[in-house]
Amino acid sequence: MTSTLLRSNLKSEIREFLKLAIPLASAQVAQSAIGFADTVMMGRMGADVLGAGGLAAMIFLSIMTTASGIVMGVSPLIAEAFGSEQKNRIEQIARQGIWLTLLISLPLIIITGHLDIWLKHTGQSDKTLQYVNTYLDIMRWGLLPGMGFAALRATVSALSQARPIMIIVVGGTVFNIVWNYILGFGKFGFPQLGLAGLAIASVSALWGMFIALALYVLINQNLKNYRIFQRLHQVKPQILWELVWVGVPIGIFTGLETGFFMVIMFWMGTLGTEVLAAHQVVLQTIVMVFMVPLGISYATTVRVGLWLGRNDRIKIKQAAWVSMSISTLFTLGVSIAFLLFPKQIIGIYLDVQNPDNAAIIAIALPLLLTAAIAQVLDGLQKAVYGALQGLQDTQIPMFMNILGYWGIGLSVGYGLGFGLNLGGVGLWIGQLVATVVVAVLFIWRFNHLSQE
Image (tube, rainbow, N blue to C red; front, side):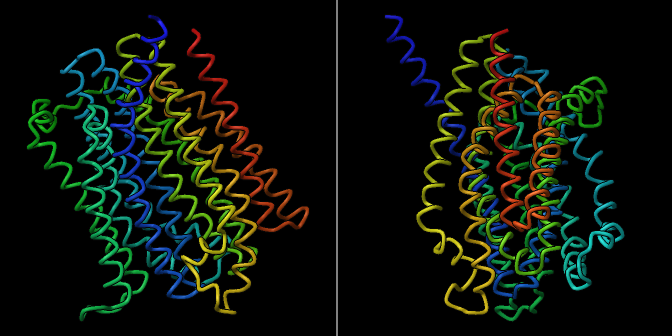
């Protein structure tokens, strides 16, 4: 009887988890397709544009993900309130999440517009800096809608309404890719704007997705009962502080993780344009695959937060292990594909038959093989981190991230890449080591908390 009940509970958890994870992971993949399409189009514009445009996109991604991570503190708090059926608290958290979006995004728009002052000291060429500035001067206007969408997405997904998120993101992605092509290459009578055209299309898509999700929250029968957009003028400092307490470590964690990859990219840039271009090809591929574990982690936060609200420790463990198993199986399958078909994957971005690309391809192949191994553990650690967020444990994982990525990963990568002259491969091995360390620390942390 007990065994049958356990199997029934497990099947129920898998079913409910997948209802959240599939739309959220699909939305993340669709959103990352924007960067994927940008990279493909940058590659068709030349190696210089590919390297510099990839660097600019990575800088913007670092800023956006850090800021969005802070407002993502909305998700575990609302999930817990939803589990304990506190409707008034759900409304208040959602409203303060919107306030937090405004308080963070407005200063960031100004800061992003003046990054060229700092970038001059990073050792990049003048041509690279020119492309980066062109891209960021436009993309900064996407910070407000991007963060607003993240806050609303966290609210809607925590209330187990994930499907519209997927539909909106897919629509925004299709719009972005089409207008990337039109504005980037000057099709259908529009001017050829190159990198600037890609940025204009991306900002337009971010505003469209934010407005669409806000309208859905206003008109959906289940969601409009929470009256999220009513009494927005009321600022609740205590709830804002709760969001900051949970969300700032998430933002710092995300920023440090993204910043780690940005430092690696800067180091790649010092090794030459070809190394930077090869790195961008591999990184963009990994980022797109990584969106599935990221979407899974969002679902994990919601499921664990829900069971935390109901004070059910057994179900918390069950939700976490379901997430870790699904994420690991997915990344393992993709890694095998990378190991079997590396040239075909690189061929998505570059013409492998063109002798002008031979040097980039020769560099990219070993980088892709190293990344294939790293992403399995990266998927695992992201799932565990989602569970830790659901438990509202964000401070300690932040310090574990600093130790793993910035303490060990960068040291190993720099030592191998420059000390032993392994170049880009050495830097990627550093990333692999960092991922192993952080995954082990997170699993230990979750086991410790779940036994209390």
